[in-house]
Length: 280
Image (cartoon, rainbow, N blue to C red; front, side):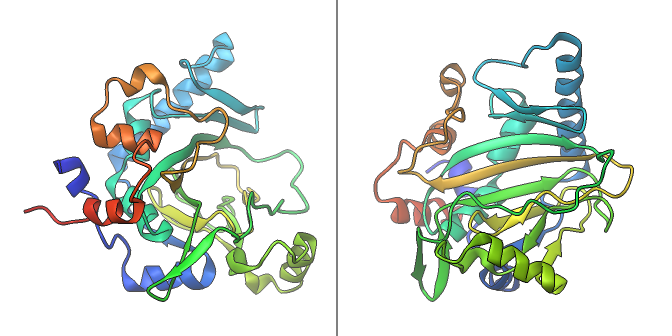
């Protein structure tokens, strides 16, 4: 096993952090990225947007835009576009947290970077959503594990008016049989159930995709840049459009190629334990 694999920590979360995500469906980990890492991603992201506004061209192959409005610019499928993006999606601490919460080896499922700006007309609702309910979960050693975990890192300091990601705490375990509108209405009737991220730049929101979540409402005049990576067990496929660039894969180590492709599909829980062993 090489140094890349051995650098993935286990456990990656403290007991308090693991308890927090168990109860609420999310946890905020401060200082996952340092200031230089944050600056590299911010500079790259704004550079990509500037180039797109000037030329209308994407920064490379195998990527796409979800939104290109003035208020919301988003570039998707990141690893091959810039070293700072690759370093983020392969960050050992983030990968370790994903493995711990999923309960086995993971592959990169999606990656995207956003610049969100204040809207001229402030929205009247949050737009809570989730792409899947908690069907694909399991309990092991008394802890809750789920198939799809996301790591979202804010690249600027977030205060109460800066539109940090907003969640309905604890909804990660509510089945899809419960109408989503009923969940949202209940949370709006008791705002203590609605939690918004406030954290310094470089902090990472780790959350179950089954948690009802939304982009926060920006009430300040500040941009909100962020980067996000999503992880699944290795036997799952990436979403359409998020398959890794084939030429870029040829340049990677075995461990990083496995992380991006999920090609190691067997013995996924044993594989996670191997990856998390400390160095000799």
